[in-house]
Length: 116
Length: 112
Image (cartoon, rainbow over all chains, first blue to last red; front, side, top):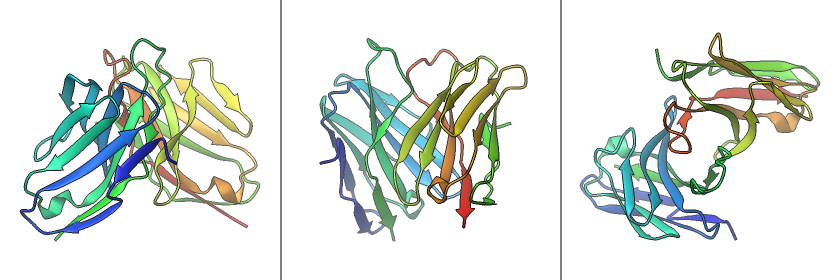
């Protein structure tokens, strides 16, 4: 089983619908991230969380919200999906600051979202 | 100037070739640098860190040039399996261990 699991892997939805992407991890890491990837734009950070009580906006947080339900779970919501939110979404984890940060993010396999 | 810039390629090389990618970064106080690899339709994975003194891992060599603000990745004796997108990653100054800044990636295609 993957250490970082994202659900759903693929989703097609309509404009205006609420969508939730879920991420769970078994790595025991405190830090979790949500990125989106678009062709030609690369990976861009949406939100990140350093522990259950910590939520931070990233580069492109507008139109998104997150919830850190537990150390192992970090969900991303699109309250009212729009077509330009069509993208590949990645959840990632990394170790907490108490350890030497190696620069390694552990990514899930991605959730491909299409908004019609 | 964008924070992290890479030549998108594609770089098309035959097996056995040596190929090099550069990546420039705009923040001179950036602290840490990495190369990630992403296969088609897969998640990115850490390839190697980039140290000030340069570092080598088998056929891969990474170097940092702080004066010119770029990092490089050299791949020797290219294999078909090296075909992927290579992402340059920077940790901005005063953001140790937080959000990494990803370049858009350089695509490598190795052919037989």
